Image 1 (cartoon, one colour):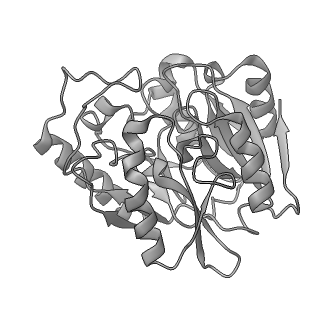
Image 2 (tube, helix red, strand yellow; image 1 turned 90 degrees about the vertical axis):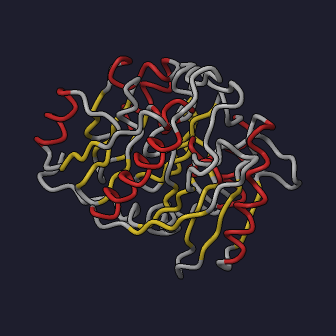
Length: 298
């Protein structure tokens, strides 16, 4: 580990969805229970405070209105994999949600990106394609790290690699409570990342830990506080929870921890990272261009 690792270049512009119609209408993850509904006023207060904390850390946040018929649309991370071309022009790979209840979100997301002049892509060569959910994808150290299993299908990795000319590192998720990669993995800077090995099969856990020069290894109990479901802006980590050991580790490396309460929003199975989608991941800077693409599996 170097003494002064470079901060992440991305993570300074986000998309979020206002929680005007957030509720729990169905069960598609272990955290959802229609008998336990979020309080609308508390939800909005928590969401506003989260946005204020991210903006105070130095990031910009754009807001998309939520469709009344899309209660999970508040989890903006899964609307699509947002990218910037080397010249800064926008591009997005829209998610193809595994569960049909969430697919109603995609047209609104497509319209939002099209209004900003983005090149809009879908996984595969037709409108169906394999399932891909953007909460399973992170740019880190030149590669796109993609979790597959519960939500994203393994075949999606090949499409991402070949259609975007990227090196895609696939890790198999096996833990039912960490059904997206953003619940078990969080890049922090050029060398450090939070990793919960319990989320993956043994081969993927070993490979991911080997790829991280300075891992903050979370145990299962720590990860289930949603602490990895955080947003990093420079040296500030906006977190829904921060166990004492995690706080000490981050503090020793010069990170400022800002904890925000997202307990109402966690009733749908997501926290700070799920509620925000980075818009400034740049091809050629954060993701290496690999002609023809390459998929790395454990």
